[in-house]
Image 1: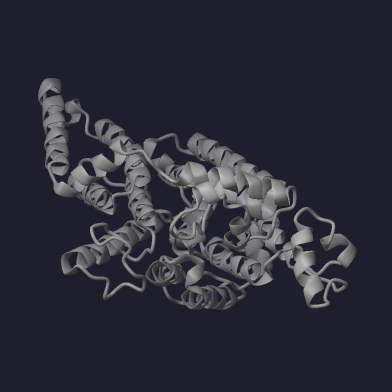
Image 2 (image 1 turned 180 degrees about the vertical axis):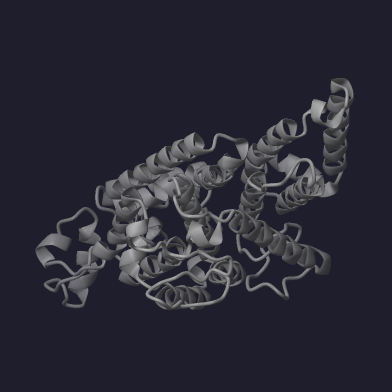
Length: 457
């Protein structure tokens, strides 16, 4: 019989008698994730920094993945199909087609008028109205793809990845604290839009807050021995409190609201792990102590001036998003059902922005990822989003069947927060969160299947 492949804690694994790398397996994943945080939080306007991350991810894949065929075979078929279809959308939008095709698709008349002026109406062109933007969007998918291929539960486990996500949140919190204390952005690559908000390594305060929410979700999955490692869980709760403060400092309403999900889950797990009978505490004393701690923390938080500013923002619900969404619907109708091309929203939205809703600054984004996908990829993009959501629900159900516990919901909950914030913002339009989403998908896929080899968690 064939000898099974060996798995070691250093990340080296038998492959044809030699190992491609002898460094800990988590290091390449951690390196790309950290680089994405430091350079990739600005979106498409910072193409050079995004390109550096994409080159690093591509190099890591080519050097550290011994066999793409073998690695792809390990991924679930449903995940492979989803990844293939996701890559095909921008790729097909870049393929030149005959003039009889691109001239007659919805929205093609706009391109026809421009190309007639330069005598190019009879040439072959891609369906995307701005191929360079679509090519940039396609290149950005290299980063989450690298996370899928580099992550292997057999060599990395789940716990190191969760601690990595927590560490990314801590790095962003420290960077944001330095920004607020110094009153400037001298260590950050992006200009400060509003100095009273915490941005960290992001150009968008909503994305900064969402990273803190995701990091708090990761804390939910941390394992510990409740008899000997109370200090570890106490530290996790302390970090959760720090991430909550960081979220409030971003003054992001959506992130603050989403933070309630992991905090509630942490509370439920705390109640389950530290039962009164295990500690010899009367139920009344236990509940009173926990309630006093929660009330004290909320009182301390809500009496700060930053928290009061955030509460005022919740009270003032005037927002330009509904107006942007109304104009976005016109753009969807103009290019439906194929879309204008991935990454081209900023270019085509200006055609349909109404004068009565015109803003002092360019909208740039739809502030609703699902509507923006409808503009750029049409019905195909919506079907793909639906398929991804179904896959996440199915994978969550399978992982719950394998290990039914609150901690198992850490990764699905993090992905859920990304999906929910996409209703009001565009979290996956920056490489930093796109990289993190790819890593979360890889971990969820691994949790949803039974691992026969020795797994290090």
